[in-house]
Length: 93
Image (cartoon, rainbow, N blue to C red):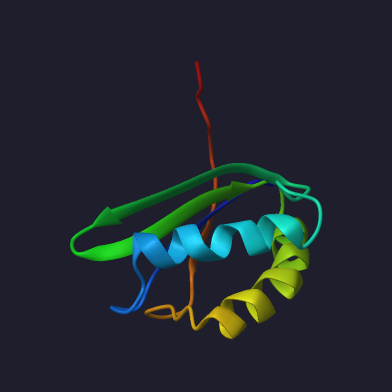
C-alpha cells in the first residue's frame, strides 16, 4: 500500500540548505531510492516542506536509515515527526 509522507522543516530549514544537502543524499546510494514515486520540495506558510509518495512503509523506512545520518550531519532539523498517511487513490495524467 502506498503512503504519503509529509515533512515540515524547523525554522532553520531553508531551500538553500536543501539544495546544499541534496547532492550528498544523491551520492549516498541509489537515487531516487527504491519505492520513491514522487518527491516535492516547497515553501508554504513560511516553512520549508517536503512531501513524498512511497510504494510502501518498508521502502520509506529503509531509505530513512540512509537519510537520517546525512540530515543530522548537515544540521537539518524537522519541526516534528513526519506525517504518514495511507493513500486511498492516486490519479495522474
